[in-house]
Length: 80
Image (cartoon, rainbow, N blue to C red):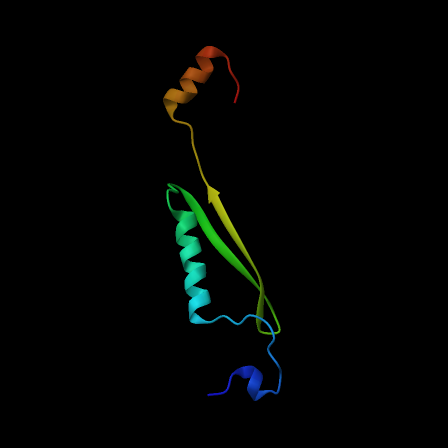
């Protein structure tokens, strides 16, 4: 079976998204999510002419102070 590049006579010198690469991306996302209680993890793949030319991983954690922490801060007059 010919790839899209072979069908159209284009040469692919870059990295293609194959099964091992996709599994590595998923493993990295799972690693980033490990220990995350509330938030999100994501990956953005930059593609140029059918090749993956860049990957960017992002992890965002949402946190909220508990009422006890807020009350202690108010009593001591501290600001966060």
